[in-house]
Length: 296
Image (cartoon, rainbow, N blue to C red; front, top):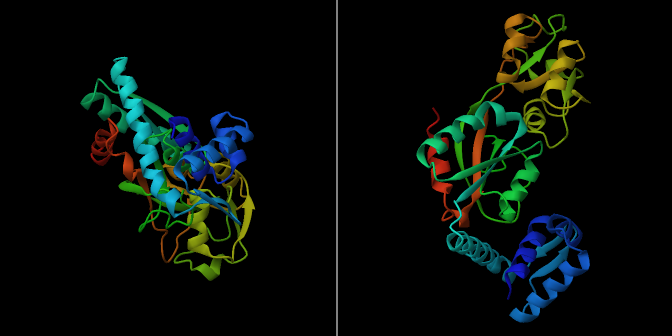
């Protein structure tokens, strides 16, 4: 059982297919398949089964998964200690919140652990961040979710046990141009919005998922793009938009957008720090949790 085989095994668990794991590892699919076969032969048991959603770990594969990450982490820690390398922590963040929420976490980390090299990695997609945390290429990531268990907003989780910490609320606002037909109404209910145009991003977007829970199927969803594009389209009168308050605060103050007043205001999303439960021993993880939980 070799470290490279364990790394390959873990990549297939996270990415569900040999092809996608090969892309992530920079290997040929044939090399990934051969490493898996060799690992299964050395252990004398099958580690994967094929399902309609791709390759899923067998019970033996699920038992191996935490051991694989533990051994890979220990090997990396040994390498760093031998070469006297500074400990490194790789923190991921959604691009939507990276500029507004990540800097204070990084500042407190720099204050509390000046010996720690922290790198910030941003991604427009939550799945990319969760996959990187699951694969061990990120120690932790900041994502958006709703109250309750991880993934309650409606997104899929990778096949590893993740822990999370709620950092702070991210309030939402339903906004539109000042001349919107509902702009002067009050106590709007879901039925009042039926047939209205709701500007949205991709189906996996946190704000779109929040809108799906809030409005149901009655509104007409119009694909626009990210927060900045959706906000600009709303200012031009192209429809309503459910966006984070921090992204529309200036426009509301200037009057280029108005808040549509709902009888039941949208629940805030939660900014959550997510990490693999079996990686808490990695240097710096606890410092991230402490810094994130006590923002400046």
